[in-house]
Length: 240
Image (cartoon, rainbow, N blue to C red):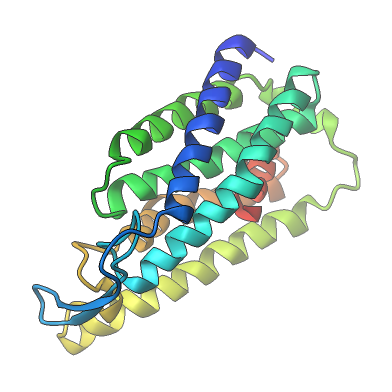
């Protein structure tokens, strides 16, 4: 694997800082507790009121804590296992490393742009940046044109590609069902907006992640070499 040393340093830094950040998110409980808050749009929101995510809505804060559990107990160990396997020359390990780094990149992108400002802001910024560079270097380490040789002739690429496309369109329809009806009725603002400035998850999904999933699926179905890279990596990302 090219740039092994650089990737290894970045991965170890990500693992340590992400584990610490996730632990703070899980185990911090300071704050007054839940309370009602009226948003600038007149919507009454229940604010979580405890711990690192105390200024976030109760619904989103719980999701953040659940994400921290995934990061601490699945994401970090998987990242280190993947790095170990990739350093041993395993192509599967490199796929796993890329997919897991994709998880960290997207996770801390969301934490950085969606979460209410908190003491871990700089940690989130570092984790997003380090994940981006480690992910990019890992993806560039593949010889894309040779990737089809690592897959058996009977690999169900059409099924896998079809699933990615189906997943992309299904989630897109789900998000559009939140965004479009208020536009039609003239309300404009969906209730899921709560006290936030915009729909970050839906926006990034609709504009970036879901199109990427669909394109990966098409490339995989057509057995284009880049599809053999994007498809498996996206599947690993989805599994987390």
